[in-house]
Length: 208
Image (tube, rainbow, N blue to C red):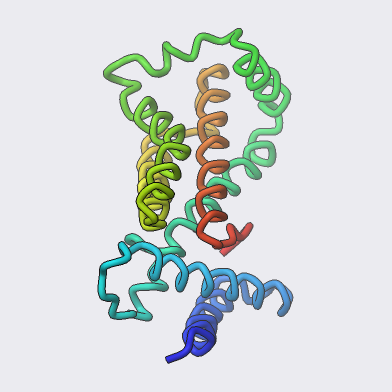
């Protein structure tokens, strides 16, 4: 089977899901989302295995939104986008406060170490460390000629973020400084996920 045939079938299957979720959106937008999911599913599936692995392509597995797949990682980015977009919409009174505190974090005026202190901050520290390890993972992938290392990194980071998302109430955090820190960490994860996906030739759609 040719790659174009795989893409066509994956795109048709992805389109069914997109139409079910976003049937009210314009045709061109739904087509673009389905195409991004299909390409992401195929490329991630092929790249997640090391070079010596014999691959049996599985359409259902490749398009799954759960597990080690392209759509799973793409959806993590969509989730981050939603958090960052909805913050000001749900809590407009926080917008200027968050912006000011994010700037203070960049300037080192807020001691973020208190949010990372053990044991309560262990998961935040681990997420920050993982997000910051992209360069090392890329270097290892280049040295070993194994793009699978980058694919695995993207999945690990997406998985870690989803755990973080369910554990911490980012937008409703009452401590304004901590809320800004959680938002900064969320933005960092998005940046690294988008970069990792880009290295794999996979787009990070705004919505899915």
